[in-house]
Image (cartoon, rainbow, N blue to C red):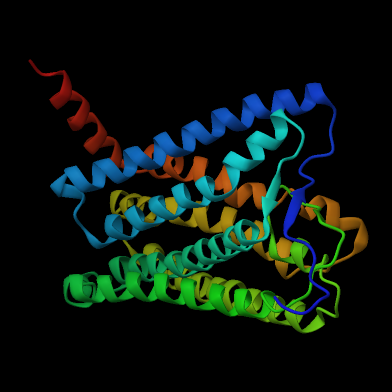
Length: 310
């Protein structure tokens, strides 16, 4: 920021331009989703921490994914709920940029974590005899640390390019949170470089990792088809099917939002797609992993029986 051109010190989030009754309905629905998100991911985190049988690389990565999902929701949903109940309250310039930074940080971290989890599946299915040697705790810690470090670094790059831009009005962000593209549209200068960097960043953290995940799963599929016993095939498939569902939900919506064609007619629709990252995916991920994973269901059952024992 700087210069006499900068006069905007706060923004108004437009949110959802709907009638009062519809907003009240969405408030109730999204509040329920938000509660399920915090509860579901909190349970996953608790089970992984407390049950020693889940102290494996796969669940170590899953615990970080659950933490990212909680952080995603807490970053954007509370303000969205507040704006659904009452006239939009202003958000400070610093608060808006903080929200942008945190959203980018968590999004990039989750992208890389999903790649790491696909690699873990690949090693478990395609290199089972080498699994313990390859996926040791030192390697797992480095992979998770790299995911978080890259998330912070790349988010700081976008923030560093956003901070110097002058904002002299209007101050209404056409979104339910301070999404970077929506904020860039309010700058009183040419933002083509920023938009190119956002596109390049999206390609590098979405298309590249997604391609590597697809390649990993093609190798996994080939390995599963070579397994002779039906029970062995089912066990191998169940090991990674949950992760594949999460990958499809996350990357599908993210690629459509940031890499797909930016037509004027599609902008309003794309405004709602980040709801998948902020609310729907974080709520669904614990359900996917718990309903399709015998080890998580077993850990939950043991925990409930332990709590219910006299």
